[in-house]
Image (cartoon, helix red, strand yellow):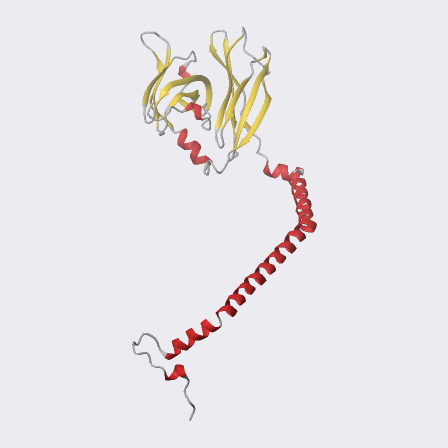
Amino acid sequence: MTKKSGFEQYIDPTGEFTNKELAVGDWFVRHKIFLRRLSFGLLIAWGVITIAFSTFVIGEYLFRGLWQDKDTRLRQVADLSSPTATQLFAADPLQEEKIQVFASSPGKYDIHSAFTNENAWYVAYVTYHYEASTGPTEMKEVVVLPGQRAAVSILGIESPKRPSSVKLAIDRIRWERINAHFVSDVPAYVADRLDFMTADTAIGAETEEGTSKITFTLTNETVFDYWHADFLVEMRRGKAIVGVFPLSVPTLRAQEERAIDLRPFVNLDRVTNIRLIPAMDVFDRSIYMPVGS
């Protein structure tokens, strides 16, 4: 019969621990210095391994990976600068409409056309003028918003006769891509800020004064207040444009209705409807009135 050790024979009168727990504690106390040295050794070994591995990786990158990255960057720049890549990421050209000339008043004429920007992420800033039989016109700039149609007009040209042989000359064109971090949905952004409605349009002559008259109600359906809401009014007969008229509405507030009264010199017998072309850069924050002003 095996003789029990002193630990096995000991019985704790308090019942707080067993003989097995006492034996484990005794072993830990006897080997405490060894366990501490073992822990330090493992930590030192882990530190040496990680430092050695990091040194190897950094050295490999400095002597080989760094040069590979430089070569890759040069190839990417070359690829993006190629004619194929330029065409892939460049904006599509603006679509130009037919040029028309209208008599705006005695001895004055309006030259009118329009650009359509079919790009979803690019704004076009175009400086232009017209060449005509009467000579070159002044230069003007128009902003063509993504997915929008913008008027390209020179109004009130003084001439004893109707300008002919009219050609549009583009002096400069600058494309600006919209940053997706600031505007994630460009069509919705533009539409929310150009939501203007017309109603109760009346076209005819003022019976008392005998002058041409176009009246309508303009409603700002947006949630934005504008210092000036600028438009070009196209006077139409069906779909055909028969005249144009500038319109600037000061301090037009959100959801506001404004009665508009235009007195063009165009023969209104030919006019059956009107169409507003906004002439505002909605990405220019200076056109908006501060909240609460």
